[in-house]
Length: 459
Ligand SMILES: Cc1cc2nc3c(=O)[nH]c(=O)nc-3n(C[C@H](O)[C@H](O)[C@H](O)COP(=O)(O)OP(=O)(O)OC[C@H]3O[C@@H](n4cnc5c(N)ncnc54)[C@H](O)[C@@H]3O)c2cc1C
Image (cartoon, rainbow, N blue to C red; front, top):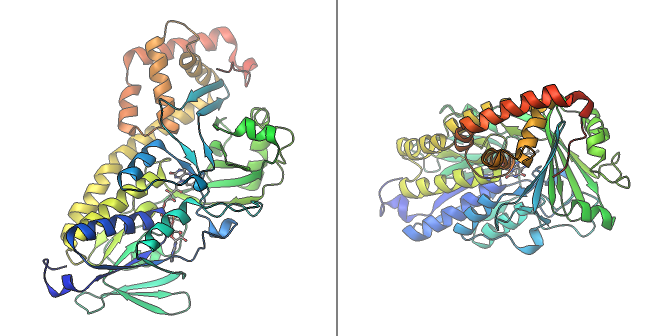
């Protein structure tokens, strides 16, 4: 875009957002704020085929639905607070369950962590729930954006044209814009169309998950699941880890791994350590909803060009966690840079958006990969897993410093907001490493670890 005051500036900038998930809605919200501050007229259309007010997997954005404390704080900063009706559960603690025992990790201080649905709820949800995605999208629609309920199939960009961007939907209708913002996630075919635009964009590579939702009518079940997220690291290849997340009337079981199928879910649900945490009355053979979503495990390449920006999962995301928080970060930065420079300044979009957002994530994600490999090794070796938990529980008495460190590390690996860099540096603590080696040797030689599998002491 040219300088303020030019013809282009006087005409409203037409922004087409492909995808009305969190990244798309955060982007529009932030763009309106930026535009208002700069007196910049904008017209926003969000293209989104899903109806978040409908139940079932098709109208959902497939996710465990944990809203981290960091995300809540970032949302508050941009004037978004999650209404009560959207919150499914308020989480008080995480429970880490390994072959070497269990550890309860209470939510630190007065931090809030919520669970939400990403669609209207499973088909079995009687009243239906206001989903997180619906809440966000409704906010930006109330602010003036228009939602067009279609799937975009093709995109063309022609420089120096009156209508530089053309989008074509699944029925062949076309739409014109000055800039297209790709917020389509990684569970969509449209990424290939952005790749074909020729500016170098390449979708992130992905890994897969398997999710199932089970209904929990029984009061006892609700009490048991009400405020605790359970993380299972059981070395059950190909399941890397699994999480059970409580919702008001359901629990969501998420398996993370590669090539997961329904038999892996059955095997997981039947594992004796899982059974211990799932009341007999829960119908573990009959999930009410299910999906096999992908999630990104690397960064997209080239995220901006003339008239085009890519945000959210389809751009960059934190390795294995805080996906929605990552979506907010890329959306916020993209909105700021677009409002500042306009859609024609390719070099500025690259310099101030692509490079900055990559700097925020790339190095940190590399360290995340290393940390998760180490975690995989530990969870497959019961004596190591047990030694870790014994230190974290303070079983050896002598490990106050290491206990606190390990608590902090485990909390932040699975739920907290600390960067992987910070976690990595904490792992290098010499005293902690010494205690871990000592405890592992001790567990290995004295306890006869194999005979204790799954009978670790609870906190
Ligand atoms: C199993 C699993 C569990 C997760 N758990 C969590 C969690 O607990 N907490 C967390 O913070 N993150 C979690 N995530 C990550 C989180 O879901 C994503 O990071 C987040 O949804 C990314 O938002 P997004 O808007 O970029 O993409 P999406 O949420 O995928 O939204 C993309 C939107 O684009 C639309 N779209 C796609 N193609 C087109 C098209 N051609 N035309 C128009 N619209 C289109 C889709 O319908 C969709 O609404 C999890 C992910 C997985 C897979």
